[in-house]
Amino acid sequence: MHPHRAEIPSESFDHLALAGTFFVSTCLTCPEADAVLPAHSKVIQPLIRGATTAMVWPPAKGARALAFPADILLPERGRYRLDLTRDVFSGHERFWNASGWSRGSIVLRMHEPPNDIAEIFMNCSGPATFSSRYQLAKGDSKSAICYCDKSASQGDVAFCFSASNGIQHVSIFAPPDTLKALYQTAYSYCRPFKRWFECSPGEAVNLV
Image (cartoon, rainbow, N blue to C red; front, side, top):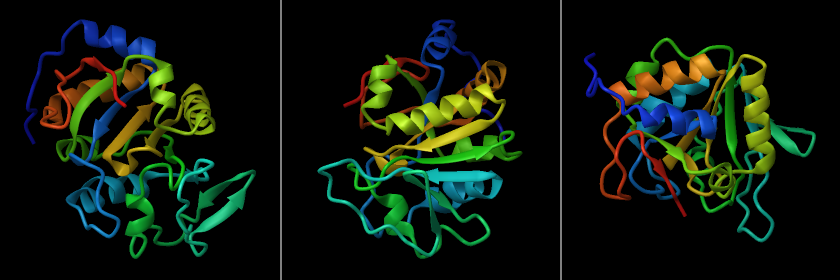
């Protein structure tokens, strides 16, 4: 594997420090409910294999709630835990592809980044940072963001799949040094963003 880009704009790390997270995109638009995407096998499933814990938040009030798959979800304190002793993806593409808050955020937590993280990033576009924590909270459950922040403060890494944009956006949380290293890897191996919004790699952006 060879990195696509090498030099990172100096201001990128300032944005990263302020946001405490960055995101990458697995696809250009929110997928159709039953769509089968390269991101499923090249991004999501490798991250699931590396996860020690996987949490799911309920849909937003007023949203058209998705029927949650009871065979892979265990209720836990107002949210759900994915049963990682089972295959939590195959046959449940509609659940993972959901967007528009029909399900809440999905967070995959692990003790360290997967060994194949560069290869995973090669199948994503990015990276970029949100312009503010408020902007981040518009796309994810606030409780999920707090959980991700807590995971990072305890030395773990968390990958958060958006409640509003579904698997299209994955926000990454980690302790400062690990987050910076992951950002550098993402910048080197991700494809530059194209088409769906104007953004220079590493730039802070406002997303609706």
